[in-house]
Image (cartoon, rainbow, N blue to C red):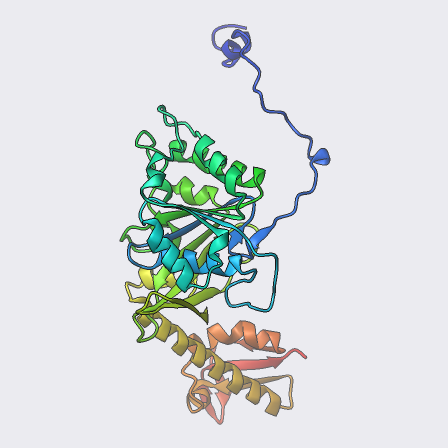
Length: 375
């Protein structure tokens, strides 16, 4: 073998033996089944990490207190009928004093005997990293050991990782997220990391606005966003939007209200979705404006489906041509109106064809569609 055919990897083959990686390999056939479990399905996982993100002053702490309050009473938000054993909550905050958190929990109806708080004063001593920026979870493990919580809230995460950890670098963040996930699994609890968002539009991905490296979001199995509810006139309404879910379909958004007295009330489900946040950002519209447009599109689609179904039911032949002149008289302008309705029509046994050439109808050459009955 000459210099031109020499194995380029030979240097690695001839290198001195390195210490064996202390990570056992598993044959897939021998991997045991493990159940995906939830604290509040599908929003918060047990044995893993969930991110709850919001802009400052949006009400993320109120939302967490409201969720915690329901769990301490053995029920879920908006679902008082499904009862379970009341849960215990550990709330670690770098921003609020204990009496504020206690009062918010009380007003949300929490069983305060099941809530344990490490407030902004005491949590200053809690460090999740060593001097070199590596994960060090001994302090958090000690707190979890003493309380045995079902839910651990870190508000916010970046306050506890230490100044040596660059939260904007994935290589620095990923070990912390994995270490927290391992800890949650070890103690069979859910860990919710609170994060802030920037003012960057959501664009193609609503989670891109969450501050820090992308691995903050990538390593979390579920992500929640708290936003102001711009779809109504009540400035105290908020919406909890599920923007990431690795193991189940994303849950329906939940609306809540923060009263002037600081009391949180769960209102019901909201039509706002992650897609709405992104679509509004892409079109440079306010969310409320986008939602109005979305509802108008939905109403227009329903009208097209109803009227074309009615036409198909009236026709006796399997296929029939209808000119656009006829359709305009029914409130259907053309192909742009019909296209969004095609999947719904197909589900109901009707296909729509768009001929490339004009048809003779009523003695004239006209453009239009062909309705085909498939059932």
